[in-house]
Image (cartoon, rainbow, N blue to C red):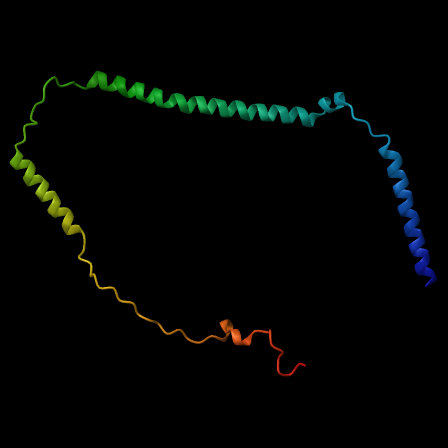
Length: 147
């Protein structure tokens, strides 16, 4: 018992010494902004954020102007190679031909779908009994052997 009291008293003395040293060091803490800006961490952080935001701004401008550049190039290619027809040639299709084409398309797309049976059947499946989900084996009741 005597050794236990000695260990406890030594531990308490070391705790008191640590608290006293910490209290004296806390009063010496000062806050100086000039030292904060001279540290490398803040400078690297500001430079890093600046680089990321400038890169995002450049990407936004590039993607925004990309559609204009592509449409300008396509317009220029079509203006050089394409002939603009002044009048319609060969677009005179009679109503009979249009009706025949639409009927052929209708019949083709109707054949794609299967005829589905409209009778719905529900089969009951008997599940095997499992005591794992049975509520009668819950532990709310006292088991037979324990009182």
